[in-house]
Structure formats: structure tokens, C-alpha cells
Image 1 (tube, rainbow, N blue to C red):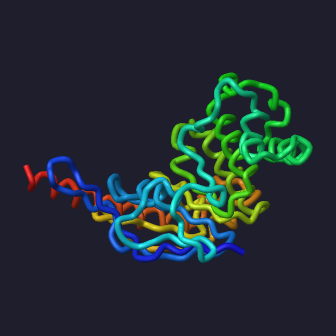
Image 2 (image 1 turned 135 degrees about the horizontal axis):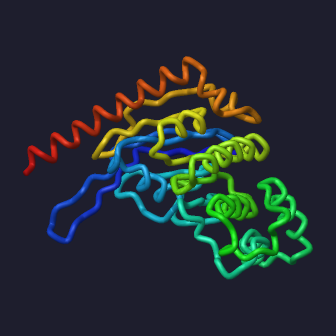
Image 3 (image 1 turned 90 degrees about the vertical axis):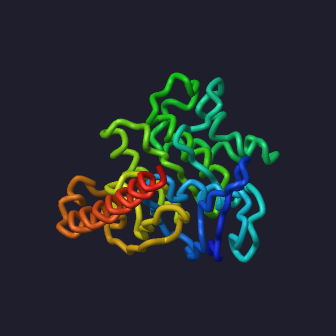
Length: 268
């Protein structure tokens, strides 16, 4: 069982002209093993900054992140990252991309070959394992990125707009795949998105973040992720509660965007 604790996290970026930007301020929350959380908010609210701190790419100016009681001080195999673009090795085959982590860890092919094939089967790429990455569509490349992340056995999977560049139909299929992998693997997943609909579908917990300094504005606990596992997501969207929450959150974010625009105009 893994626990991810974010404890009074703040992040300030100091600029060359002597000024600074407070990207995050006093963010605290705890995720238990197997929870699926989506993070939503207007541009500039610190969503990606938060994710980069959780990944260990950035060190916070205040506070800390603890995974299983251990302070996060940099990237490691306990936290896997799936980027908006797959960040894959274009010249390698699908199989070689997925097995990259185990190979770098010094494992023998006999120790990981069966699992890699199993992961490719789960993400629907069993028949494409010898293809080079550049031969695949965007959606297929994101499936490779998911499988590669899982091959490293992380406790927590971090996703930064992983479906944002996909067409609508492919995005819906990938949303279903994320829900399937969440249930089958029991992994803790944190997903950043700009889409209110996606945040509702892929978050049993949903955080709405307020604009700079980034902080938690409101948290929801929702039934739609569980309802969407193995189901038609378009049917889930017909739930009256889904529609009500979507309109509530859209209005909330729209008001935040209006506030940001007002600040910008006042500063000019």
C-alpha cells in the first residue's frame, strides 16, 4: 500500500529582473494507494508545476512531498510520468521502448519479456510490437507510453495532459483505457487536464485549482470513473449529475478566467 502526501507545498520562481512569481501556495492533500485524481484549473494555476514537483523534476521552495513516508528529492522509479507527447525513442521498436526501463535496471530479457508482451496485449498493441514508433499514430504512441510507464512498476503514475493532442474519438478510447488500467493495476494515478469533461470522467477525486498563486479551490469526490470502467463513456455523460457538475465547474473556471483577465487589464 502506498501513500502520497503533499505537505504545505509552495513554489516561487525568481525572475532575472528581481521580481518573482508565486506558482503554488500552501497546497496540502493525501492520496491513498489506488486513488485516481484529476486536476483542473485555469491556465497559470500551477497544475503542471505541481506535477513536476511530484515527479521530482522541481524542488519546492517550501513544504515537501512524501511517498510511503520517504521525502521526494528527485526522479525515481516509484513515480512514473506520461507526458502530453509520448517522449518515446522514435527509432526503437514498440517492444524496445516498453522494455527500456527494465533493461536500464539491469534485468535480463528472460525476466521481463513475458511481462512486456502482456502489457502490450493490455494496451492493444500486441500485433505492433516490432513496429518503429514513427510508424504509429498519436493514439498508439500514447498506448506505448502507458505500457512503458507500467513496465517500471511505479507506485504512482503522473499524467500531464496525456490525451490533449488526440482527436475526439481516439481520446475517448484512451480515456476508457486509462480507466481499465487503473482498475486492473490498482495504481495511484494523478492526471492533469484542461478538459472539464475528461476531469469528471477520469477523477474519482477531482481538484479544481485557483489561479496564481495556485492553490486548491475545491475538491469533488465523484462516481463517474467507477461507472465508466468497461462502460460506454457517452452513456456516463448522460447522467444528470454529470451534467450538473460539468456546468458547475465550467462556471467556476469561467469566473476565475474573468478574474485573471480583470487583473491583467487593471495592470496595463
